[in-house]
Image (cartoon, rainbow, N blue to C red; front, side, top):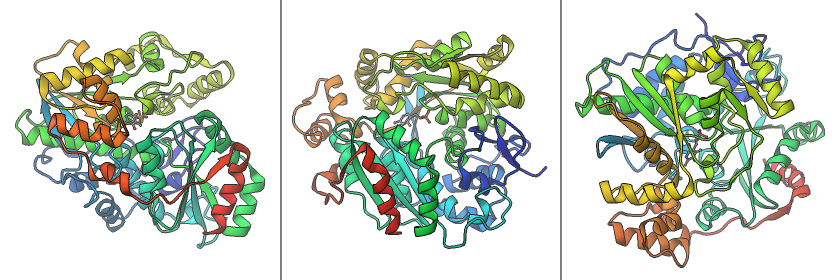
Length: 505
Ligand SMILES: *Cc1c(COP(=O)(O)O)cnc(C)c1O
């Protein structure tokens, strides 16, 4: 069976994975999916003891078959090399009766590195003929460059900058809301090295910046100008791109391999995962792993106070018309969880008409409701829970006291949900840890009763002193790193900033 990709909302497209990665999102607003998912299984019999990179090859080859073996191996070697502080890439560690899968040992200390270290390498191996309408009729020439454009509330911007810095054929522009990100997050972005990177603070909040970016993407005049003046096309690195989703499938297999190696399980035994979730990308990857043959018993969605997914999974009604809370787990603060659309596609057995209708309802009414039998099916695999901010703080303290292990506020949501669930002694449980606690040293110190005054760096030092752990050099070193970007632009100046950045390509 050949693997082609089409929209979750219609079957008219027929794109290769390279085309889908270059294009990002389907013309009808749907997300790219393939009906071949699961027809090739990944062999789990010989996983134990294999390096991450080797497991990554098997998994990514099954998901992106039009990448050649040499291409794929090169992407993997470049993405999962010495920039990771642990050679296992995503090490699995015991945590009380459970296990924790650390996804934050990459260059920016957040789980988004897993995907954003390899996405630029994938893109560099697509050509303009892979983009456009997919006919390869030469809408563009070989000098065409991709300009990645992102508005960020913190984590994504830095991980994207680190991934795309000096990546061939690409440039990247990141906007963040002035005064609305932490000192560490701001410095992570403004000190970014690379000849193809641009960073600006925006006079406005995250929603203003995000809306402006969406408008820029829809601006035909700008698109024509960029194409004519700079041979550039705009693209996005957000988590609806299939090239950002599939690298995350690998760490589920890696977790299983490590459980086998540590003789916690035998081949074929089922495992449960508890996953801090916002846009549903992190957990959807676990479902893809199951379709590829990984014995996954349950996937548990852990949300913060923005618990729209909890309500959906308990009632069958998705309702985005609700207050938005800015919490201490900012990367999970979300009202529209985009990747859910892919899960609904597969659970409805590819019912594009249903998906199209639901997404239309979401757009027009801010809400949709799925059929009862569909919800029942989903609930057999997906559990759910959520933690408020007091519970998050309490769990950071609880986990430290019980296990002498420091977790960040996002991971703490999952830790809380795991504590609430009845545990099945026969099924090992893996909690995904999505950020280093040193990215959020002030909240962590407050929760643990350590000194939380002074700068973020003072907080890092106190955390280090009190717990005997070491701050990642990539974060601690920011205090003395050279600031390269000090631009502040008004909302209506963002478009000009992008056009100027493209001129330098
Ligand atoms: C992005 C992010 C999440 C949520 O991941 P989704 O793919 O949006 O579900 C959780 N924790 C951290 C630290 C993140 O950066």
